[in-house]
Length: 317
Image (spheres, rainbow, N blue to C red):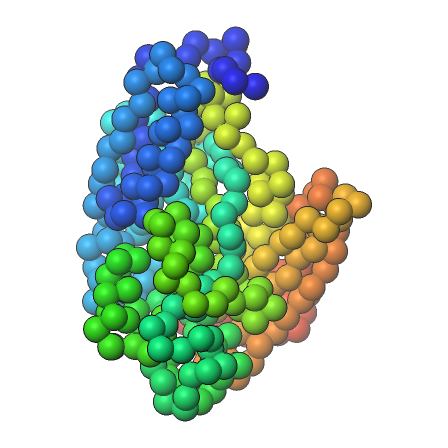
């Protein structure tokens, strides 16, 4: 499929709303270039925006409203007609979109794992007691504290370049970032070690790009269909269903990761933890690739049966 459905006319112009960070712009430019190749008659441009999540850097996301702060301004641009689509890292997209918006497309996923970045150490196991590790994620923090209680975990905010600069200045012995962001920015050489999903279960949707539009724009859903990646979408839908059932947010140390195993099977792992890693609840289940959301919900139910509700209630107070 290399052109728009004949039921809809290919637009003469298409505007992509994007955050202005280097990674967000890479993502928007990647989608722009794919769309230009598919629809050479369409003028595709990018509307760069600074979101509230980009502006407030001295407080952890969980204390200022969560990752939804990265998408609200973009949704306003869509609602007002200043942009047609918005490109997001799916791990930043809330589990419930506001009324009137839809996730029109899930694109092929990059490496979903976390990356260990350090100038002096090969991996987490090499860090000495008291070494400072930087991460902005409660999910990463809880797993780090559970596996390496002798390390000191400190918050790390800012875009990828800012975080690397803080590491290079010696503020941290190591930092943990998404492998996908480093690879997309051409910074893969900074990765000392890819952390296995067995050791650091990824965030829901990590490494995948999502494209959002207004719910009344069926023409755009058709237009974006060639960018839809079925296997990636299957995994991400399972993960998002788990998080939705657990009412996951930045305030919750929670991870979810689905993988297609062959034979029509989908493997899904999830966890909920206390921020200090002292209590870690895990679930692993296998289901059909034909109903990924049912599998995600089943993993969530098993976690709730283990007591995840108590952890979530305490964190959301």
